[in-house]
Amino acid sequence: MIKFEEALEIVQNAARLTMSTEQVNFTESVGKVIASDVYSDINMPPFDKSAMDGYACRRKDIYNDLKVIEVLPAGSVPKFKVGVNECTKIMTGAIIPEGADCVLMIEHTKEIEKGVVRFLNESTNTNICYFAEDIKKGDLVLEKGTLIKPQHIAVMASVGCVKPVVYCSPKVGIVSTGDELVEPADLPEKSQIRNSNGYQLIAQAERAGAIPGYLGIAGDSEDATYNIIKKALEENDIVLLTGGVSMGDFDFVPEIMIKAGVDIKFRSIAVQPGKPTIFGTYNNNKFIFGLPGNPVSSYTQFELLVRPLISCLMNKTDVAGKIKLPMGKEYKRRKSVRKSFIPINIVDGKVYPVEYHGSAHIHSYVFADGIVAVEIGREKLEAGELVDVRQI
Image 1: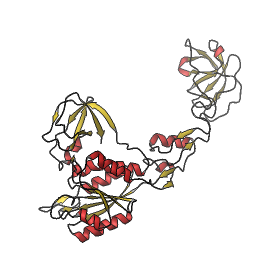
Image 2 (image 1 turned 90 degrees about the vertical axis):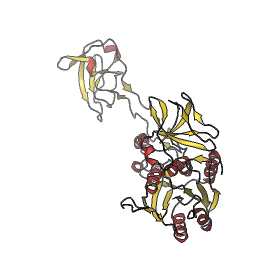
Image 3 (image 1 turned 120 degrees about the vertical axis):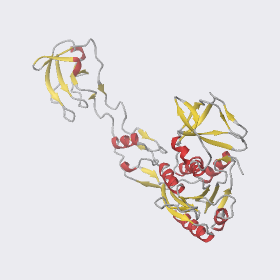
Image 4 (image 1 turned 30 degrees about the vertical axis):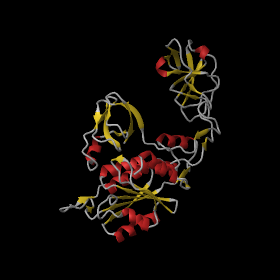
């Protein structure tokens, strides 16, 4: 049994190579990671433009009555130069006409007669977005390694990057083990339970940016387990198995992994939940986890170990949100020989443990905002103590 920090280091060091790259349509790139820098092919703004609807004029004339010489919508080119005591009625985004150096907000003006306006305020801002003040042609706008979010789509659209080069998403094969499992659509008979882990892991893998693939349920048979593991390793970059990794008579997953050619790196971790977590590599470029069958254990160890592996393969930092907040009340536990991860709520900026009955109590996570670690040797967290919250 090794400490969690050692396990995480082993997992991250195993991912020495990143995924290959591909070009995708930028509209389908959210959640992927940019594999090459993106530069602007234009200046932005491409011309001096009005920041609002109003009247473009010379600042020195703003206290005089101004004759409207033109109405200029966005997308049109000015026909006239603005002269003394003249103005152009201008819409947001339109080109500032020659001669004008400010825009009077339309709500700060009054039409005193047809075609003549008067400024009502004491002063005005320029209200002009200047040529190339945001981005100059050739500027770096998105760095390699950026995790693409919706705001980055707007940036790519504005600079014409419609086919970005991104890291491929790893394929994750998901297998549940155990004769007691039935699929969610089936009504369990006596001694059976529905397979929740498999579908939970599918959702977690998808959220992490991977491409999940469900291979079904492997019964408690060595041959069936061997065959499904070999198939999963051949077709995927990462394989996740749940169940069959503890010390029961039918928990033979570790031995089957070895038979299938897996180099096991560790077999258990000093954590709670998730102690019987196994990790190994296959052909030095594929990875396999044996996760515990209890749903909270599999959920937690995915977030703590599998998600960082996916991040490494996609050349991104782990994006699981972490914030430091004070405990709202004292938390105690009976044993401190393992690092413990507990579900918590955040209320008014403070952390409160969620009622939690153990690693089978996945319903406790329905109400959780995150998880908090309690280190080995510590039996309690004090009220007011700052803790690291991993948001989920």
